[in-house]
Image (cartoon, rainbow, N blue to C red):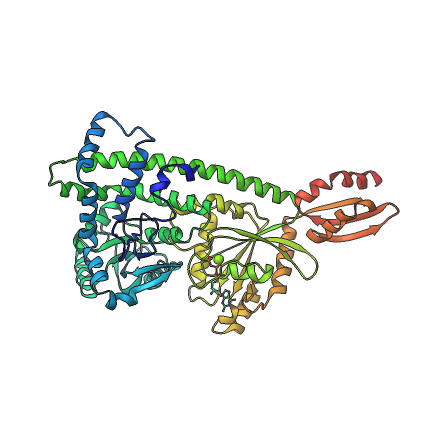
Length: 542
Ligand SMILES: Nc1nc2c(ncn2[C@@H]2O[C@H](COP(=O)(O)OP(=O)(O)OP(=O)(O)O)[C@@H](O)[C@H]2O)c(=O)[nH]1
Ligand SMILES: [Mg+2]
């Protein structure tokens, strides 16, 4: 069990993110990831060093960390006064920010904001994007992608103070952007007093290191993936989501460990040359072990979920899954149709865990509706992989409802991005119904409706309830695709079964006979199976 693992007593995936450094603004004399209610928000890879150290301390009792030579090397590191080293490093890295927070609390008080029920010091962020020449016309334009990155930064609790982009034939392998752009950004971020620079694409460990070096010691650099992982980390509320996010974060960290130990070599005055490298090896092993532990734990959660799903599938109600771009209105639609109380807000990635509720239609029919995590362009692959268990909900549905925010200027690009993820999840064979949501918010609702009609798409507003009947009818019609035609003889003393057929299936014909009812209908496969003996009775009577 993860809860009992010593790793998680000093290092909890719910309280600390490797990519975002939460540190106390004041009233906290020691650096602590737990129990901090006033913290900074801002993606920072350097924070990983402390987490890895905590991991390593905890793991020393758990695993063999290597040969005697390894241990000797580790001892050199341990001989450094760890706390002083940590404080010094903390001061050096974040001194400017800390000082600002301590000395000018008054002037900075407007930068302490509530985020996810926590007071956070709102760091200033600067965004950087690159448009590569071979970009497809249908892709997000760089300005739009940066706009979305700004929304992500806002969701993570950062304050975006500026942005820039560059057109390149190919990204620079050392710094991703060209040297002239690096210099331009450096002067901009120093003038704006920026703490974090966020790149719109995934950067390599070397690029992150080179850029931090080029911008100056106290400016942190991170990428879109780290930002998304951090938002997921902040939002993870259940055990399963926490495990999945931790796994994705560790997979992200593994190839990026290199940069974390360079500072220790510098602190030791070069006396322990090679120590960083040795340390990386030890840490990689620790991370790999931890990834193995998380995978095992997820496997058992997955088994539970599977069991629950199998039980649910044995109840013959068709399952419909809502999929779509983040913020499209999936949770609002679930709430409207089922009276559920799922969090629905104008923020990215409000939902991480799936919720299933029964929809009772006005014609007496029922189906189960599942709301799940939203997608985004450039969705980190490790996140898709880690959330595979949750996303299995989607793969076992009878029908996918693709909810599109039609009022969004990039509705088409968002639709394409979702289709791409659905392909990745290999669920394209499941019947799909596209609905255009937020029609009330569209610039020209009438034009939208006309276009929708031409394409056979349903227009709805999950807020006003407009189009809900059409939506339910369309779900019903589509569900028929996944239902099985049956003809059965149901005895009168099994009236409940006949009710079930009426609720979940589509009844074409009923004939009341002496001992029971002959029924011809389309029903879910599970129900068709339980009707098998009664189907044989019809066959025998023919
Ligand atoms: N005007 C209008 N706003 C809507 C409609 N549907 C949803 N919204 C708003 O859009 C925002 C996002 O809605 P959610 O239901 O949280 O979106 P979601 O698709 O579940 O988002 P994630 O959980 O992040 O994937 C909320 O502020 C909703 O009130 C609609 O039909 N019209
Ligand atoms: Mg949602």
